[in-house]
Length: 223
Length: 119
Ligand code: SF4
Image (cartoon, rainbow over all chains, first blue to last red; front, top):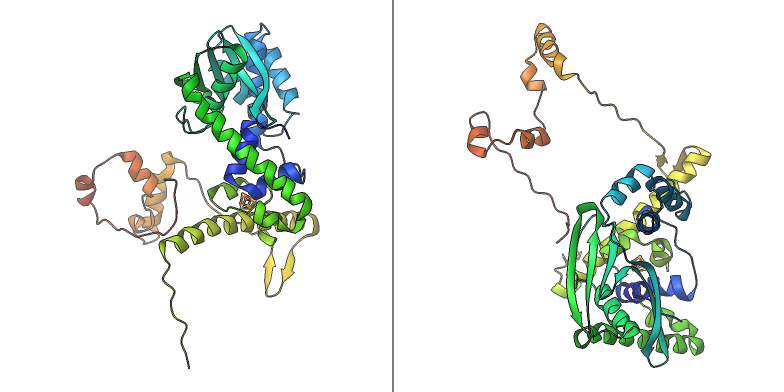
């Protein structure tokens, strides 16, 4: 399995949801926040690269498969709040994490030793409240041979930037977090091959406030 | 005859129960959504002594310009309009008056509600 921040973070939040999604391969319905995020990212990317606003919004709506809850109006609002800075957009990275495990991700915007992740969330949060920014910082420093990088979460609704300057030494903590979880998952997957009835022990359901947004709640509850 | 003893949770048990309530509430919400889809497609469902179906709630939006007239007509009916027309909490908040100002017109009533909210 190739790991990404979202996979690891899902496993950390609830191993059972991770199991249903990534091991059983059950698909999750595309919720409005997911579809809107996808649409807005596409639109910002195109606008930075010279497309007109109307074209960018249209391409965003297509990207989100015309999700019924995603409107051109809301997209236009978010697009108008995006920082239109020249840089590389939607940059893919894939690199070894260690122990034969690979990490991949997409960076929304990068220029020299700075990168940004655009967020359409309703609640802004600090740069190190999750491991995402630090993990991306580690990956980009590795891939681009940098010793330091400035990472930022840009909350479109609030035009607010939460930034942090990472050193390689510091960002390695996020790599360690990712590697520890990925190794744990790999080990559990190999156990599952021999003891398939141990799935609830290996990937336990971990209820909490996150259940509110879990599409597998009925499988989980009746299980 | 033995009585059922009321359970007092330890902190660890309370944390588990709180997390489980989150899962159950999410499950109930999903189950009700599924029932709603069923009723949308098949009509009302009688399950045991209950019927699952839509019910209509009625509320009225009065034109602020005509409230005076409404109050007057209530008086004509022989009733005190001010016993019927109340200020909802949201309107009082909108007014922005402090407690001292509001106390001149009435008494403060407080009730406690048990629920969880974001920390
Ligand atoms: S309902 Fe909650 S505990 Fe169950 S799989 Fe989903 S997130 Fe995990």
